[in-house]
Image 1: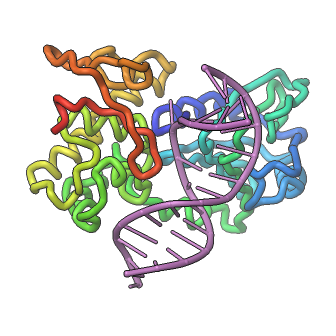
Image 2 (image 1 turned 180 degrees about the vertical axis):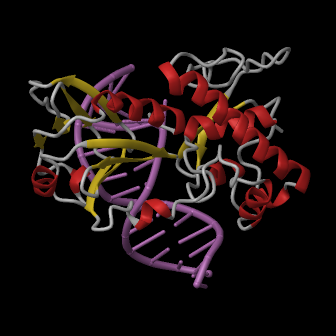
Length: 268
DNA sequence: CTATTTGTTTATCC
DNA sequence: AGGATAAACAAATA
């Protein structure tokens, strides 16, 4: 489920434990989410450290603990972050539970496409991979020219597929990519190379618009996006295009392995 | 039993 | 080298 705004919503759930010290850690050692950092290293490395700060970057998250301990987290397809009472007993898909003083931080992920890493840095600086992430879509460094150059690098690739590329559009996921194409009135299958410069500017602007709205609506309390958006209509069979005066039936199909929804009338 | 899933990584070919 | 493509990963839900 989680894209840009959902990720930030989950990140903030864990903020309830800020400034508290880790007492113990529960793990499911065999879980695939520990493929980069073994579960035992989490159990060993986190206790007695203080939870100092949380950050999100696109779909990536970083939780900083005292003494230069950095917990990197990605929610994959089905990951969720919640909190629970400090005496919480982990359930089947709660692969990582960090017990603090007054509550516990819970990472559940039944499909296990998510990932968690723990790195200890001597200089207390964030790991290199984190510092080298591309500009975030809502930052000033995410410029019009950057978007233009990125899109032009892949002239054969469908626009929707490009929007899903985390190197260029960190945080954009399936529903956001479809929403951006729909709002732009362009078919998601359109090869990037066929778009003119003015349209590349529009992609930049719309990416930021959809991202900003999502952060305000979903990122704060997970309330609903407007019904005037594609988002609330895209999964229902026989869904109708919500654009004023359109009324066309929405189409759904596979584009490069991802379910894609679009309006055949508005998006030509 | 089969098909489907809001994501990334890896292998392979070009 | 780097782009294009498909498959793999896992488990719940319909």
